[in-house]
Length: 379
View: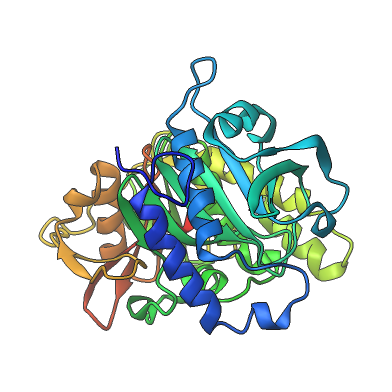
């Protein structure tokens, strides 16, 4: 095992790579120069936090692997934190023991440097914007994030670490330049500082589809169109009759009043995502109106089966590839790619049981189906 002189335990080489890249990015950014709320961690601090979290991720407490979120901030930078007395030096065993207390989303172990030593000082729910966050997803699986301007939106992912592999989210993804209108708000959410909840509905749906872990397909078709029925086995297993307590209700109320609880939207999103867990595809309009679920996709023209798709992943160093859609997953991916070929004004979202998330859309520029692999953004 390799040891580092700046740490008390075994090193994790990927941590140094990430720490140096993040520090260089932060130095070139105007974000930290324009905010009084957060302190930027230096290279040694980032490396120490990532390394400690990595080794903690490999431990098991009562037969379970830890899921942890760590935020670098002082107690004074938080609101109503729970503080340990005394605070405890940061190490892997400590993180593994504290993990059950911070397993739920939105709860973080607060870490700060005291006299040159990193310590866990307590637990917090409130963190400032641009705060450095490290989340342990599974054994050797870590994600570096920061909090956006809007506290109600998902944290922005910066880098994903899986063992020795490091993926940095591409900041200016050229492959996303021709996104269809139905996907524009999703990518804008990740390439900017975040937008309002109504603009991020597709993001919330994608996250909820991944969260149920059963895999699923969601087809988004133009409002008022019936052409998509030609690509669905008839009769449809479960058609839906309006009104349905759905996302449209939230949008209408939000247009009439500023006093709308975000929980209303989340419950509607979760209900829609739940439909996608049923075998077959769920179908909604591009105004988020549920139309059917449990639907079976068929090839509109047997002579025109999809045999290639253009694959884009917004990760630095990964180029677009033309691949067989069968290589992206099982029959669910192949059916979604076929639907996007046959219904060129529609898009298809596919969540795999293993957490991969792919969106299929027709590309007029490339004259083929374009597959966007976005799971690195949704973790």
